Length: 82
Image (cartoon, rainbow, N blue to C red; front, side, top):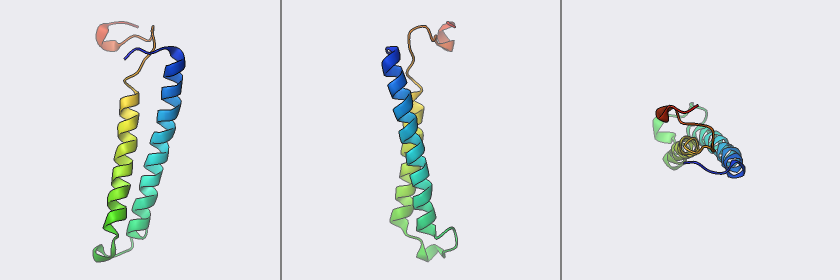
C-alpha cells in the first residue's frame, strides 16, 4: 500500500514500538507464568502463559503487517521497480 512519506514514518515508528513492547511484555508474562521455567507443569499459571503467547503473536503480526506500507518511489520487487 503506497502512502505519503509522513504517514509512512509514523506507521514505521509506532508499529515497531508497539511490536517491540508487545513481544517483550509477552516474554515477561511467560517468565512470570512459568517461574523462570522452574515450576512444575501443574504449577504454571496457564492464563498468564496464554496471555504471553498472544502478546508475542500480536507483536509479530503488527510488525509483519506494518511492512506492507511503502512510499512513492520505494518500488516493489514483484513489480520490477527499484
